[in-house]
Image (tube, rainbow, N blue to C red; front, side, top):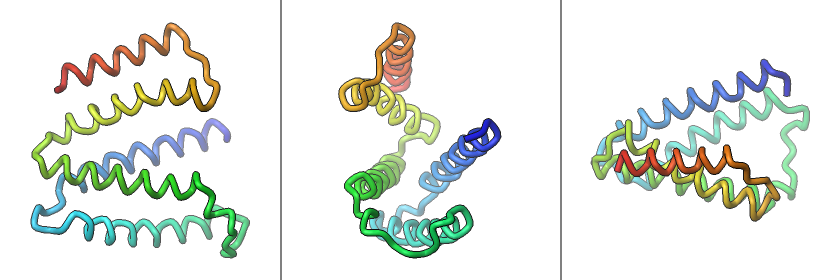
Length: 141
């Protein structure tokens, strides 16, 4: 990826994250959480289909490789994240705290995953970053 496309990808993820948390915090409490996800995923499916046609040279044909465990794990993980946030916000967590706590804990855990699963190296700077993340989570509790 070029610098511009990397910047666009990060900006897209950041803007999506902000929209996601504002929307998750604003879901009416009288709506069933699982049905909220059904409608949200239908919306995501439509946008993903259009994005595939726009971004890909592979056409519309499906591949059996799409049933790869990593692809299925992505879907399971996304559903867990989204249901977790909807329920967290229903439990009256502030939007300014929930994301920081969850993402700080995820970042700290991923340091160990990176080491054990992906052969990444642990540096003093990464240890300091992990400690700062955990310290921030502790301060926000």
